[in-house]
Image (cartoon, rainbow over all chains, first blue to last red; front, top):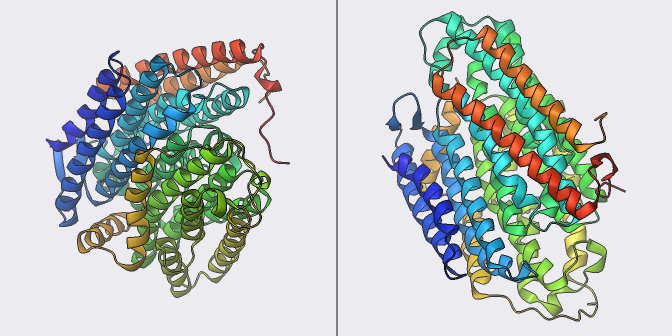
Length: 481
Length: 75
């Protein structure tokens, strides 16, 4: 039943935010609503962690370990980003029009709804629709600033991802064909795994390639990544946190669901596809990071890199690397959203996005500087943080399974990206400050959102709570076969 | 991306989606009704979203020639 509530709450919130009441009304209900979604999904995650499948409507809406994990991430970032939105949007609307604020929150809730629907829904055709809706609901959030650049970014975003969605649709319908000729299985993720033994490998492979290209365009895998840095740098920062932190992760989840389905036929070589696409993404992203001139683009490239790492980790193919991959998904979602909050605060202070114009942030605004340092260290993979742990897990399992070339390349690119992220952030935070004319006071909610978001960022590096550990194990097990 | 105008690009995408869906229906005729209905609804939303976006671009930039929008790129 909770699953249905989770889908209903954001829909109701979207309606409520449109009510022309006091200007604080829409933000307030959104924060309260997303908080309740987070609590509900925590409850579901606890139940999924002990190996129970939470079913609301059989064969349509259900949740196992992997989907509960993704659901939890979406709910957490959805809540913190809603909290962060309050102060950020208030400061960023020039004409202070309450109508624009209401529209922002309505779209925010619809976007959240579509992302919550992806892991919850288990019917594959409906998952495609949910994925497509994540694009369509977020287009106007990307173009929220209405500058020519923002409009350009959202145009690229919608064109490329809709084209990708058409490919993915074809792939999914081919899969459906395979399931319907193989027997009476339902067209769900679980039914697909059961039916996969009877589906001809050629059919499965065709479907997989179409879906990989189609959803890969949304995840930002490399030949189709060109929209990602634009959209992720032009959107308002809380939306960037959603786009970069969890939207990519959620869509990647839809690709990962195919992994156990395709593993039944070793002749398809699904692992090789994952590794090749992953390594190319990580490599290209690492070099794009080095040349980035805009700090929000820097974090966007780092998202491409992390998606590549997760792809490679899943291609390496044993339980340990799957565990590393799921942990990487968690750490990426949590830390990347925090990074964009930090970038948003820096943007509020400085008003400009290019790295060269920011110097000595530690003198002018310690909060932004400390947040950027923590976020930069954490996302680059410095030791006490979660990304470091998950990357070590992945590299270790790569060495154990004897994939030396892939592991070596991955390690090399990770190191390049590490330097590429930390040097610019170092330059931004320290050094001699330039004079900034405008002084901005941060609102309490921004600080509060940062504090809530930083707790798991720091905590997960030292200590993984036992239920989360169980949940990761369930998720990793459902990726293998 | 051969087309530089916004509207032909929208039409291109819609026809791609259309083609994918027809090809799919011919190979998988017994898709559940709800999936087909939501897919149709989805195409409607694509048309609306891209239409509104085109209008916004026309308002702010003064042209619908989206091929000219190239300010965001790597140096």
